[in-house]
Image: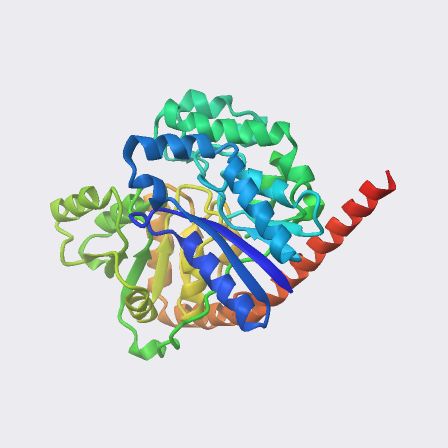
Length: 409
């Protein structure tokens, strides 16, 4: 199969899981013998240009005629069977889908976040999920609440993009298949207006994992992995540890972000400096080594996560997960089988559930074994490849039907 794979890389100052997913799927397809051409842009190109770069990004977000022309030339040159876009914000823009309009190339979009209908990308406001724009199918709430970077000026280009492509019916008419990451995310998008029959669920996978560590060789520690920002809820986890006190197990916080200094100050003021360790941003190999020796991963998210790639990593390493009962996380964590769930934003419920789990090492070990089985069944490279191939086949079928209908008219 001939595939044109496209992605707008986020700025290097803010590493993104979407960049990693794009690269792993690219490698997977090439390993399976497909011809894959990359068509990428980098947000660093405008971030390094000051005000001029900011203006360029803002104008490109709703519709980038230059990206459309460049994409059309590529499609005419290589005649791909599939044009698969991972992220179009801000420099590619959804205009690229129109480049395939009169060709035989089928189009696919992976829904890495909620930006198709949510200016913030992550539907959260005041530390609680907010789906006003998705439910109302209207961008006015985003403008009113200054949803992108707490700025109405910064929100306008994204709101314009959402409004324009709803108006043009881009998603109904120009995209042949959408890839949602969980059933929960699929439901959110279908309610917001995507055609249900063309939204398919395919989770991410993790290609390079170390082997799990024997349970007897693990350290009695709990791990948090993620960006240290409000929506990830690490402050809720630390508050639970503060209430637990000196009897709490060691907690390792892996990741960095705008809340790190505040969180470290809270830990030091609470006298928990010996119980809670901040490791900052470390390499993937170091993350795996730290996680595989843990007895539990905790994800106290306050927002609708599109997907928890760190859960896949934990499962592959045989580590059970405790997570917020919110958004896509309950689709991935099976209560009493691969881990446990707690009420989001509630440090007391988090504390109770984690205490119960940690007090029963044998049960944790059983959950860890089940987690590894779940990884093999749903999140391995081979199972992911088969799902992706099925989605590509459905996209090609839809494009052929669309062209047939157009010709018959």
